[in-house]
Amino acid sequence: MSQPNTAIIVGAGHRAITYASYAQRHPEQLQIVGVADPNPLRREQTAARFGLKPDQCHSSAAALAERPQQADFIINGTMDHQHVQTALPLLRRGYDMLLEKPFATSEADLWELVATVRQHQSKVAICHVLRHAPFYAAIRQHVADGAIGRVLNIQAVEHVSYHHMAVGFIRGKWSRIDYCQSPMLMAKSCHDLDLIAWMKSGVAPTRVASFGSNFQFRPENAPAGAGSRCLVDCPIEKECSYSARKHYIDHPERWSFYVWDSLEHIEAPTLEDKLASLETSPYGQCVWKTDMEVVDHQSVAIEFADGCTATLNMIGGSSKPSRSIHLLGTEGEIQGNLEESTFALRHIDPRPGREYEEQIIDVNVQGDMTGASGGHGGGDMRLVADFLKLLDGAAPSISTTTIEDSISGHLIGFCADRSMRQSTTVTIPTTQEKLV
Ligand SMILES: NC(=O)c1ccc[n+]([C@@H]2O[C@H](COP(=O)([O-])OP(=O)(O)OC[C@H]3O[C@@H](n4cnc5c(N)ncnc54)[C@H](O)[C@@H]3O)[C@@H](O)[C@H]2O)c1
Image 1 (cartoon, rainbow, N blue to C red):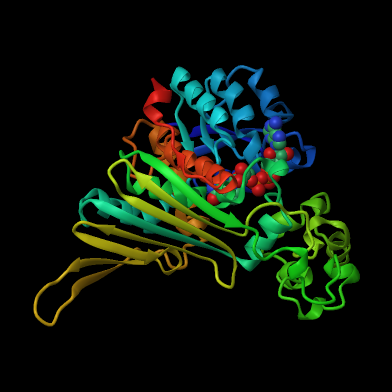
Image 2: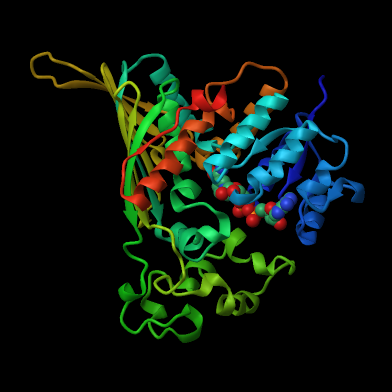
C-alpha cells in the first residue's frame, strides 16, 4: 500500500482544520505532520488534535519556510489578505498547496502568485469547494458533454441569509476592506463567479459591469429606539430579528467558530462568559450601527469572448440561504438549486400539445451537506480527496481547480468591484498576455 501524503497546516483556523480533519477520517491517505500559526493556543490545539511534537509546530508561514521541506503539501487556511504573502516562500521551498479562496486580493498579487506557481511547477489547488459539490460537478459534466449545446447565458444567484450576513459581513471579519482586503463579492461570491467561469471553461470573460451598495444596514434604517449594542443598551432587543442573543446564544453552535473566538482560551465557555463577550465583542453590535463598509447586495453582468452573457446576483439578508444557477444553451437548459440537490435538464419539444421535455436529476446529497463529506453541498471533503489523487499522479477530475483555472473567476471579481466603485464597464485583462 502506498504511503499517505503528508501535510502541514498553515493558519490553523476554521477552514484549514476542516480540510485537515480528512486525515482523521482517512489516515491511510493523509497525515498531518505540522502546524504553523502565530497564535500559540491554536498551535497547541492543533498539535493535540493531530499528535504533533514541539518541533513540528512553527510560529508562522515564514518561519516554516526557513526550514527544509518537511511535508508533501501545505493546507493554507490563512485569511484572505495573507494568502499570497504566506504562500510565496512556501512554494519557493518546494511545497504543493491547497490554498483558500480568494487566493489573492489584488490583480498584482494574483499575477505574482501565478508566476511563482509556474516557475516552481507547483501543484496548487484553490479551495473552490462548490466545484466539488456533486450538484455543480454534475451540471458541469452535462455542459461538458454538450447536453445543452453552446452556453449563451448563465444566471447565478446567491442569497446570503440574515444570520450569515450579520456574522460575516456586518459584525464579522469581512465587514471592512481594511480587515481582510476583500470586498464582499470576493469574500463570499467568488465561488459563484468561479462557477460561471468554469461553466464557460476555455472561453475568456471580456467585460464586466456591476452595481451594488449597502442598502439596508445603515444607521438611518435602524428600528426606532434601537441601541448600539444588543445586550447593553437596546430596549427593543426582544423584538429584533438581528438580536445577538437570538443569533448566538439561542443558537449556540450556529456560528460558534466566529463568534466565540475571543473565548477560545476557555475550554467550555459558560453562558455568562458568552453574554459578557457579547457586551464588548463586534458580534454584540446593532447591525444598523456598525462601521461595516461592504455592500449588502451586488449585481454583476459579464460578457464572454464568444458573446455569452452571465449575471450574478448576490443578496445579503435573505430569510433562507440559497444558491441557484440557470444555464441556457443553444440546445437546452439546466436550472437548479444547490440546497435542493436537484436540477432540471430541459429541451424544446415542439410537438402538438407539448412545450418542452424535462428531466429532474437528483444528485442525492441530501443529508450530506455538512455531514460525512463536509459542508458546501458535500464539496469540502471531496476537494481534499481530489487533491490527494492529483498529488498521487491521477488525471485531474472535472472539478480540480488549478490556480490557472481559477484566474478568470478572480479577474471577474476584481473588475466587477472596480466597475461598481467607478460606475464604468471594465475590460477584463486577457490571461494569455499575462502568462506568456
Ligand atoms: N472555501 C470556502 O468555502 C470558505 C469558507 C469560509 C472561509 N473561507 C476562507 O478561508 C480563509 C480562512 O478563514 P478562517 O475563518 O478559517 O480564518 P481564521 O481567522 O479562523 O484562521 C486564520 C489563521 O491564520 C493564522 N495566521 C495569521 N497569520 C499567519 C501567518 N503568517 N502564518 C501562519 N498562520 C497565520 C491566524 O492566527 C489564524 O489562526 C479565509 O480566506 C476565508 O475567506 C473559505
